[in-house]
Image (cartoon, rainbow, N blue to C red):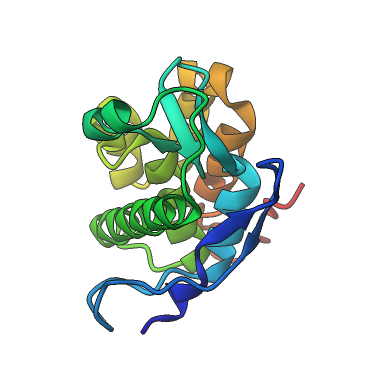
Length: 192
C-alpha cells in the first residue's frame, strides 16, 4: 500500500485539530499516486478538520478536511450533523487522491516536474476542484506559455484572492518559483 495510507485524520473530541491516524484504504497498491506527506500536512493546515457539517464561505455544506458534500451526502447529513470518523477519513483520502492525480496531469501538460509545484497545483485542485483550469482559462494559458509572473499577478486580481488570500499567496509563490533566471543571473528567492 502506498505511504499515503497514513493520510486520514482523527479530530479531537471538540472537532478541532486533527491528528494523523492510519487508514485502511480500500484501494489496491499502485492504483493511485503516492501523495507526499508535505501536501497532506499543507492541506490539513489550510483546510482544517471538522467532524460536523457546516456551511463554508460560499454557504455550501462541508465537513472533514474541506470536503464539499455531494447531493447524496446532503440527503444523508444535514448541517450540524456529526459525521463518523471512518466516513470523514474516506472522504479526505479520496479528495486528496483526486486532487493529486489532477495536479500530476497538469504538471505534465506544463512540463514541470518540481514536486513543490505539483503540491501547489494539488492544493489548488483540492480547494477549487479539478476543473479549476476552466474557471481560470487566462491564468492557465499564461502558465502553459511559461508566463509565471503574469499568472501570479492574474490570480492576485481574482475573486478567489478576495475570498482566500492566503491560499492564493501560496499559489503565487509557487508560480513565481517557476521563473527561470536569465543565464548568469542570480536566482530570485520566493521565500518570504
